[in-house]
Length: 165
Image 1: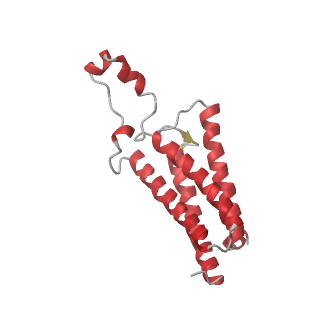
Image 2: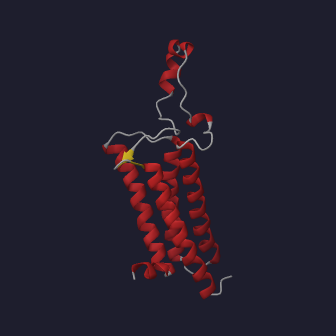
Image 3: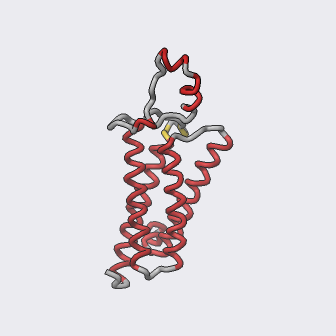
């Protein structure tokens, strides 16, 4: 019964807003309480959840605007694909950008202390933090894929119901 009420577009926006805000706040909490510095892709995913929150607020305010409705759906698709990319980088399905790779220092780098100081951010291609043995990147991917799936159904029904197509 709860899933059926989430198909309602306005309820779906509220649910996605709360879930995205929860993901954003929990990511900040992990960083502050556990002193875990996020990798570059984790930080981008965190701000993706924040952008989803802001767009959901606009979508709740302008419920019958086709542009805002499609912007909300497009931003969820971007978050889904970005979290899938991050999951692939972490599991070595494809190569990470140079700023995200684990690069072992050479003897030349050991003499250059500025190189070692600049590499304070953890790399994206290793699992940095786990909750109950599950990577936070995988949890983020599961949450973003669920939000994207649920929102796409709700948005399509909302568009056809209100003849915004």
